[in-house]
Image 1 (cartoon, rainbow, N blue to C red):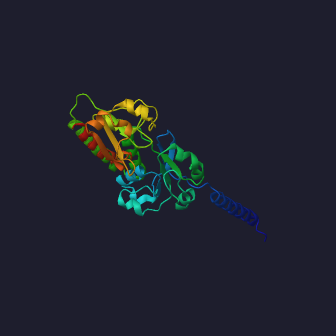
Image 2: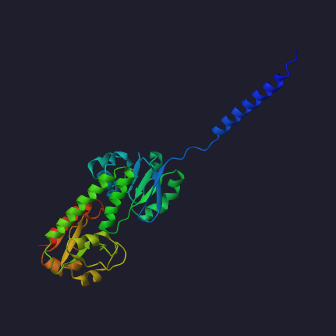
Length: 299
């Protein structure tokens, strides 16, 4: 006898199998799950998105390398510049070129999740290339001591050690306050900061070193000059007549330019050398420079 239920049962089975196959196919083409990210604002006002957990970093400035180590992210560094020589552990990290001309191919080959840079000029040349490789670029360009504090705290957050960054900043602020307390206030001396003897590069309104001089108890003789690091003429230097000269000490910068030979600073022996690595790197050790300057200014 012919079973009339069979065609119905067979049809139901076919429909169920088709539905299952359809569901399987749908799941196989579903979009990949989004990776959680965090967003930070860099010193150019750019929104920079980074993974929740950072595992690889390239630093293109000595001060940023120092900050990364100071907040406990040294083990994450896979590439640094040839100028990154502090702390000692930085010397053994893969070099990706110098600060101004990093090797983009080397950086990409290292597959960092984020690259830290210190100037906009670095950024313009290769940001698009790195972003195409899904490598974030973060610019740190502090113009004051408070900006340096902010950079340290933000980098601490990025590498996953916010408490360490906050503690470092608290320690720095305490040292700055103590240094200011030791200064004998009265008429604040006019201070000229010599960055380079021959070219007479100095500091201007937008330099964090101008802020350092102020907090150490002095007044920068070039505080009103536009930009961060202007170059002045010998005639301009002669007219400044500073009470104190601070030299950012390097191999070619250990004596004041001859334009200052008749200044109160030279006549009174108030010319002081401060290690350029301390003064010219906006990182944790800049407070060492501030303390030394404060000590000199109270003499």
